Structure formats: structure tokens, C-alpha cells
Image (cartoon, rainbow, N blue to C red; front, top):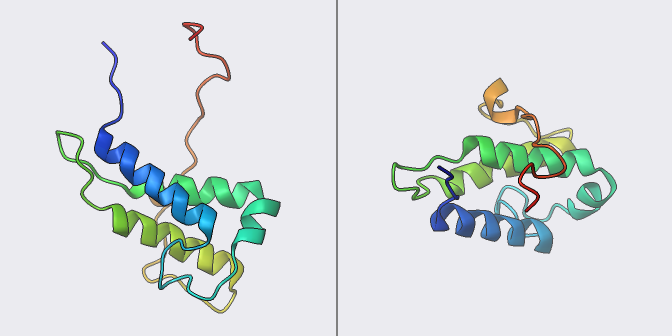
Length: 112
């Protein structure tokens, strides 16, 4: 049996990606902070932003996202602390929030 991500999560991820791309992620946390150059020049920073979002997001049993804005804020707070040495996250990220999990194989076993 296979499972697909819910429409709710798909919408949350799409919206998060839009905000990352157009420079409006996590307002007001990143308001007035030009972070896009960092994400363009340091792919690992972009990877960490998405990892935090994905690790923090919570869905109910039906796949409905329950905390998209909170997951976005945690990712934005980390990014702010990365580009602004004077900014401190409160509370600091826990290990599970920033964990980078193993990626799937580069080719799908089913060849699809």
C-alpha cells in the first residue's frame, strides 16, 4: 500500500515555497532582512530551512495541517539567526527540529 501526502500538506508546502522564493518568508520575523542571497549562495541553508519546516509541521489523522504558520515561523527564526548574528531564537531549536534525515535513492526503485 502506498500513501500520498495530503492536499493540506501539499498546499502548505506550496505556500511555504512561494514565500521563500519571493522574499516574504516568516513575516514579521524576517521583515526587512534580505535573506535570498544566502539561500542562493548556500544551498545547505535552504536545505535547513525546508528541513525545519518539514520536521515541525503536524498533521491530524486525516492529513490536515495543524500548525503551518508555526512551522514557517520556526524556519524563519532559524534563517534570521543564520543571517543576523545579533538575533537569538527563543526557544532555541531542539535537535529534532533541525535534523536532516536521510534522502531517498536518487532513482526510484519502481522506475517511475
